[in-house]
Length: 70
Image (cartoon, rainbow, N blue to C red; front, side, top):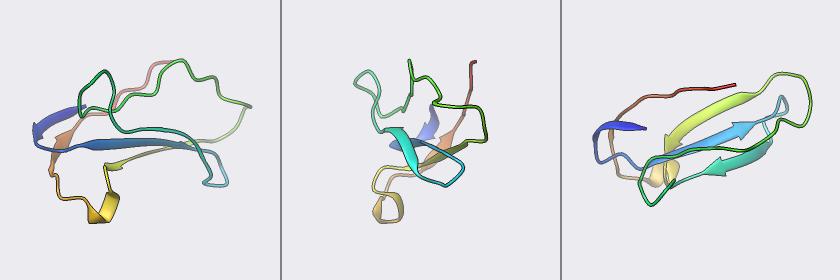
């Protein structure tokens, strides 16, 4: 989640082909992002991508932390 600034995070989970499996912009009415209750479809490599809402066109900035629970 955001730790400083006005950053509006966007969280994406991609498979090994870099196809988006699931994404989240706002979680629980906040500008923080969260992916919960999602089962990975198969064993393999996945990529977690964190950026800001509207990506390059976005204007929010700040710092953030990422955590993963298995």
